Length: 183
Length: 61
Image (cartoon, rainbow over all chains, first blue to last red; front, top):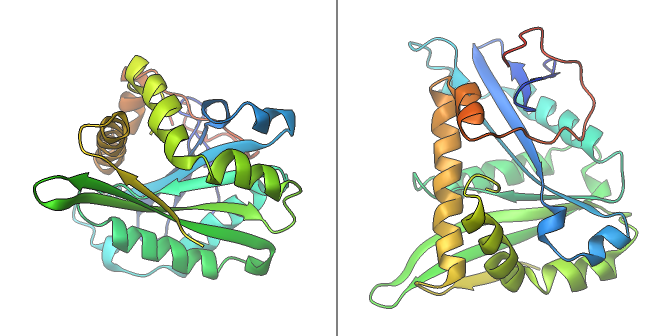
């Protein structure tokens, strides 16, 4: 596993691999964008993502599989989940058409997570319709909680059942008001 | 169980979806180019730190 440090100015979590890649992970608390009921139960919802860049432009390390990377991200997530009231939302972006690969990769990492049996992963599919050509774009993601999450009925009622309208109304309003406030 | 959300063309959700994906792309490109700190400054972004780890020795990180 690699050493993780916190970027004091950006708030990102960083680690450097022995292949010369710098991984940048970020959490964004989006609890307030969802139902206020979540706050009553002290539930916290975070969007999580990570990406990397090569510290050397000639480096081909992107193609190399590195077990320590998944171990490090798993460790970061395990530390995050020391609080049983936390929820992660992970959405793969579609911009370069590689969201399915990212989604599969994240699923593999989740399945390799230490104590994976202690967590629940609920897959998400977002499809965008186009009236002329049918399906225009899609994104994949998931919601992760601890298995012993104490309020599954609140999660179901206030987040999962309302997912489309929550994303479609509250987050849109926030995002249009402040384009950089959410991902 | 899979949560399925279908977004209608030209809906508010569609606008959000496009904006959200564009932001993720911009973030990934900023990291790929090594300019993510400038990206955060430019967009006034500071991410949440729900996990305790030591600060990077690089104050710019």
